[in-house]
Length: 59
Image (cartoon, rainbow, N blue to C red; front, side, top):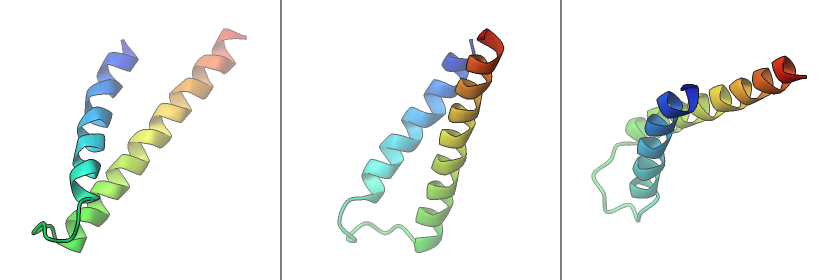
């Protein structure tokens, strides 16, 4: 169940990052890029932590 909860925000962040990596014609402010990058980093770190916890508890 954790994967279903974690899956959707990460997919949304990946699509957001794909839009942000387009040329700088987009009207995104640097602040918006910075915040979305931080959110993506925290989501990925949480996913890694959950995977590590599952490995520790399974052994």
